[in-house]
Amino acid sequence: MVSPADVEAKLQSMFIDAAGTSLRREDLKKAVEVAALLDELARLGRTGTLVDVAAGKSYLGLLAVELLGFEHLVVIERDERRLEDVRRAMGKLTRPAKVDLRLGEVSDASLWPERPGVVMALHACGAASDAVIDAALAREAKWLLLVPCCYGPAIPSWANAQAQAERLGIPHHAEAQKRFLHALVDAERISRLEAAGWETTAVPFVAPTVTPHNLLLRARRLKEPARMAEAAQRRRRLLTA
Image (tube, rainbow, N blue to C red; front, side, top):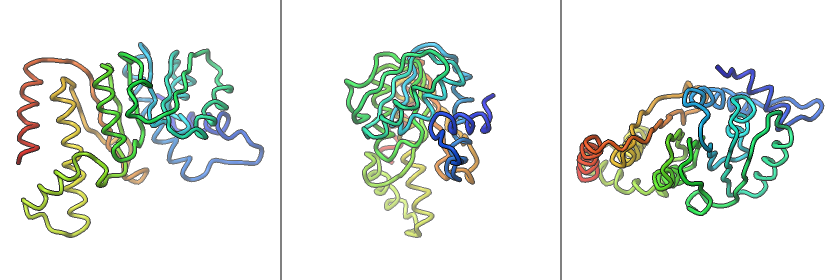
């Protein structure tokens, strides 16, 4: 197992490494999240290319190299300044690895490798989560570890979720509406994966006190025709209810 303390030490040495500077409260919470996802990743094995998408500073990807021994990492990030942070942290890796940095949007298919072993995205914001799913499907990844974040109108299935809330008479109380809409958005994402042949589970990967966005979608590409047909039927019911 990778402990939060292991992650904290590497965040300090690889990403901060400034005399007299300590990790902030948000860094300590991030360490808990990264440690939990690295444990998930360790159970999948180290075969194939690892893709850290919507990566930010690629805490997750670079520490998968440093602490788990992944040998090929592709980092996809749209913010050039964050990629510079990734490049600086790469110089502090103690393990040999091939790390490809790719600047651009998640939805840019040209940035993605074919048939990666694992695609992972921690807190892919809004519609970025949907773009990650679509790209992982198109590039035939073996595994997907996705933690969605920031729900709202930019998400493709949001309008459908709102329409269903109206049809069902869900009260217009903010918290009740929010929970219903979030659940329908994630149900659509799960059904999209399953109809495409991916066995999918949805689990809380950390406590809600660490982050309210603590839902992990763990998906494995199986392509079993009978299960795909059944999932497609459920998906049609979900989208036309």
